[in-house]
Length: 251
Image 1 (tube, rainbow, N blue to C red):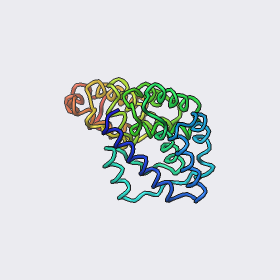
Image 2: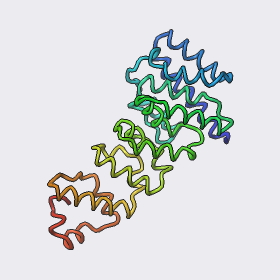
Image 3: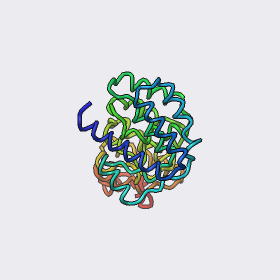
């Protein structure tokens, strides 16, 4: 791992710890500090797994209260990181994941995968929204794609929304599937980071088909799709070529 990545992770840990310790009880602060120290000292991974599951008992599950300065600091440390929707327990759990020894990528990724496999929904949301902060991010693409395929909307949203990871690491196939699924589950495309930059011709064709299916079922079409379509397809020409298929109502 490069020195730059180490530098970022160190600062992320400090920032996460600062946020949590300002918003939990003294008992929780002591427990969290003792636990991270044990993990840092190379304690058996069982210590980590046990602590990860017990975090809410100490921190609670209330919303993390962040100022605009906090959010600016987060974005300065990790571009695109915007944890305005994070809770205190999610923040503490992310800190524990980042405290695990990272020098050996195989061991780290193995431990991380074990957490994913055994996690409940709330824990999965924590892990997926933390993807852009984790080391070896390029090796987590398959795991991230699993989140996109989840039938749990909260898990899907943790990957797809307010998260810079998909735009940075997904290929067009997975990216396009994610955008289309966001429409089907009713998630706002505006919350997908990098949406304009990752627009592509195949996605435009998929969105046209989506709009046609919605029109055929007399259902509304989200206006969010058209900026992604018109980058590659002239909507006026499309309407002229297929007037019965795409009325002005849907364009």
